[in-house]
Image (cartoon, rainbow, N blue to C red; front, side, top):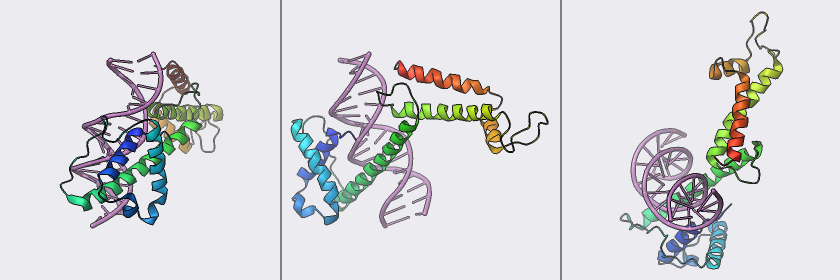
Length: 180
DNA sequence: TAGGCCATCTGGTCCT
DNA sequence: AGGACCAGATGGCCTA
């Protein structure tokens, strides 16, 4: 994961603003987090970033006191973890979507858009290959049957041509490739 | 240098 | 009540 210098500085600011030394405020369960902070500090040093310089969002005065700010910090940490999980999920999704521009990481919006169209394409391909022969799929001669996949697909796409999805997907891949 | 993308903080709302 | 979720704000990094 890319470490964000901004967060580095924010963490430092919080630490510096606090009256207590880090040793005093550290509980034993925070060791892992402290390690991360240490890494942040080292990176910070190497970039010559100083806490309090421009680019820091100014810490708002907390009218609700110390207890509130402690809960805020805990809440921030949970939010960070939540976003990390979300980003891991995005990364996992990127890894299963075939795309042309492999050397450059897909953005989130590109990932979601490609994934959607990839799913559509796969669904259309399965239906084309099965040619109505899936168990329960509608029999092309009698019109009976109706597999769940087919029914769901028809609900979502009506009378759209299956080949349209393939075309759409490949067009999209190429537009991303061109960076448009 | 502007614009896109991103990580983080924050306060509000929803859910358990 | 407390945690999860969400959206807005902010500012850094990168690229054309």
